Image 1 (cartoon, one colour):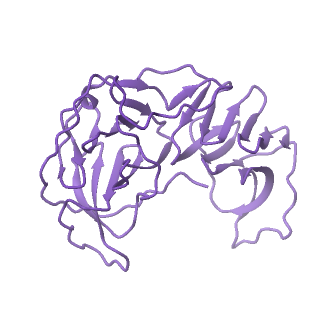
Image 2 (spheres, rainbow, N blue to C red):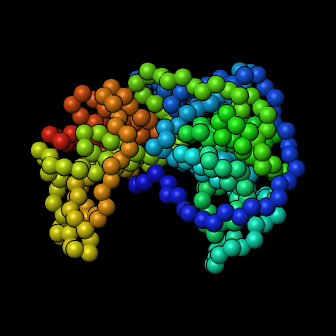
Image 3 (cartoon, rainbow, N blue to C red):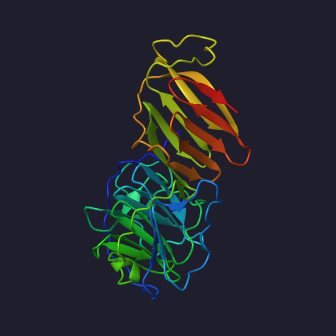
Length: 315
């Protein structure tokens, strides 16, 4: 499993529409590095409506990316480090000219890079999932320098500490960020909480003791990039030159932990190391970096695996 793949497409700029003002509210509250909670507690579920304290800013590690939608379901966005792309069921803009051969439906989306200005672009591919989990009104996601807030009147995305960005709703859009509490909110402080809970709809990678792991709400898979003191069940047939090299992997999917041998050409470094004593949770999938091993569990089935270069155990 992989974190979402970015598709390099040619940008197409169009004139902006009318601007719908942001929702005025007090200074935002912040949550650092996802929603940190103790390992023994339940995940914190954001309120579906704006709180009196203003937007809650959830910071997502830059090794992760994912999709979210507005509560109305009209707008869906893909957010990754340094980039956000949003599409709308009811588009408030004129269609962007077709700039390439496209055998599918030609989409017009709104696009923002951390190093550039917001613009409309034409896409032959559906980058954001329209069925992605909603970002509740009064809440925001920040990934790298990009921050997106779900306001009662519109969605606002901007480059932090600038006015470069956009606002969009069902009837209008603007290729400049609005002046809202989100634009001037301080950066969230770090947190020492042992387990970081990330939003459902996001996926990404981490590394542990030479293993490269990819994680989402559907499960986790780790490639073991080195010798081990244990062996998974052998493949029924050896890998051929066309299939690649034999790879030892551990998976947790469909509520079951297992070790397997697969064939692959590519290597994977995962992401930043998951420090000892820290963990990540997405939905019911939780991985904890312990002193001697990595433990990944499906909290619904209570099954998973414990792995290190010295040993492996499914439970």
